Length: 356
Image (cartoon, rainbow, N blue to C red):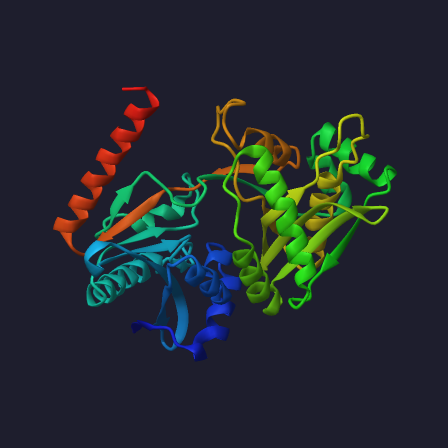
């Protein structure tokens, strides 16, 4: 027998145990991530699916407000199920029905499911004929690189020659990487945020709020699932990044670096940082390291992620395209109206870009 119900605080340990043990889960479904979602103005509504009293599925739906007091729910990289299990289709159907009914009670017009499954994953069959409407878009980054962690020799062999050079050159330059895992250490997260701001400003990206970084750090590090790594030379902070560990998977979350001044030797601190991050994750039982976001295939230097994508590609691994999203429609009329409004806005943006 399966039972779908709202999650309560007493479910936190079972929720995290399921997340850690399930390949389709990442930090966006971490129990602690609800604090970040709330800061973003998208409070989570958590639900569990049980079979014979055991948690077999979880869904953290972020409630996005709409006009008129309605909501649109989004389940980032979820629901988290064992999609390889032969019962996955039935469990997904139970979650779809449960989420539909829960969303209707909260006056949501639809629920968007965006599973952490690759576009070519055979387990996508679980989504067939389940009363779901497939959509091509994703709200999370669509492409990433995932590196299988191994011993040092095998890891280095998987890097391209320029990346191996960068790792070794950083060592010769005297770059040292240290780890911080104390959630009370705000100096580490503030310094990381400062480097991210510097990096984002160079790229012309929006600057992230410090408060959001502090909330993510306190929540995830406080639960023992996040570490900040800092690359320094002669005491000067050159690069910093946060890694989040969920079971046997790690995720490269926030990162920033200092750019060398004109005429200053290149220190390759970002290479040392990523190398140390992979080794730390591996030593904590991680098998797969997700570099979290690259430019789509075929993109050229005009794409804003072109440079960071080339950097990440140097660390090997495989490129992954996520499958897309599926909508559970609750209010068909408002759902169609919202979709039509979104299309019209897209046309308007395109016309503006063309100068029409």
